[in-house]
Image (cartoon, rainbow, N blue to C red; front, side, top):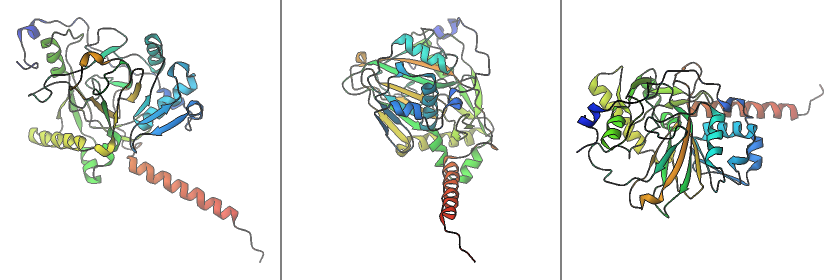
Length: 349
């Protein structure tokens, strides 16, 4: 039986917690960072950009040893690069909780048993069966009014192969759309629904904390730190676009899923090792773990996350990635020209 049916177990279940209320979080710590990230990068023995659009690995940096200034710079690097990876971390679970709290109010997934973290385990089964839940790209519980901003996953144990995680940049996904298509999507809103997650949890023996909700969020959102335009698409939780007719919405969502699945050039794949960490921005990245083909009891991680702002779109104060690159190149050109003019000798008439 499919797990997303309304069964007697679903009808008889009463969630123990009330729904979450909207709130305004403290300013993002990345806004306090040195734009050059000098303190953080000075600690690294190497900095590797794993792919052009997403993913940076910091080598030689221990999260447990960061100063507040370095934590702010790490948040900025995550906001800019989508996800930052670190290996061989000595950070304890309590220190991970403390680090998460530095960045904001800790988020609690509706299916999270421990109030401070989620225990991530391996997955198997037939991921290709009809309406299988859990093997799709997603941003974590985007149906919340205040979805997570920063998320940190530390792996405790990993299989020798299998269980990798794929991350894709939604900043770049928006940027690769044609200008007319970008304009057509701006101003639209998608309904992010917890219904399937809720049904799947109960029918699978879980006990979700809160009743399912559906929340309308902008289909194109503005990042509060980088001011970049982001495609806010989540195939796991988005079920329709509110301003469109049914078939219009279905076709646009089908295209966006195809656009995402074809984005190999906008994607990074991370192979886990014990003690490795991925620290990502849930606002501009979607991800999925690759299930099956390995002993799932050998994969375990601890995930912490913090609430972000309610997603918003500000067309006057945001730009695409290409627009930003072109603006920065013009600024560099003007600076070079100014420097060249100063270096020219004055002629006596």
